[in-house]
Length: 121
Image (cartoon, rainbow, N blue to C red; front, side, top):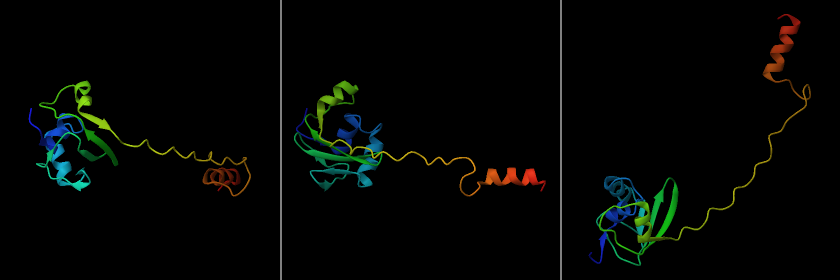
């Protein structure tokens, strides 16, 4: 095992991307940063580096603790990084939908149709 691997290979090896092509595309799109700087696919990653990857619209922060030789199981992949991503902020509860009493306020489209049916229009 060498002292560094390509960042796209590392992302693929620790199962952050399904294919190496997807990992390379993420680097090209600017979704990968190594130690705060945008990373090209061939940039080397060493143990102790911080890798930020934008996955599904959210930035994830990882510290490299190992360099995978090949893509293995999820349990094996978890040994090669520490997840430093802060927990998401708590969800703000929305107020319940406003329920009005039947017949109160302006008639809805359904109410209007019933009124027209009663009047014989």
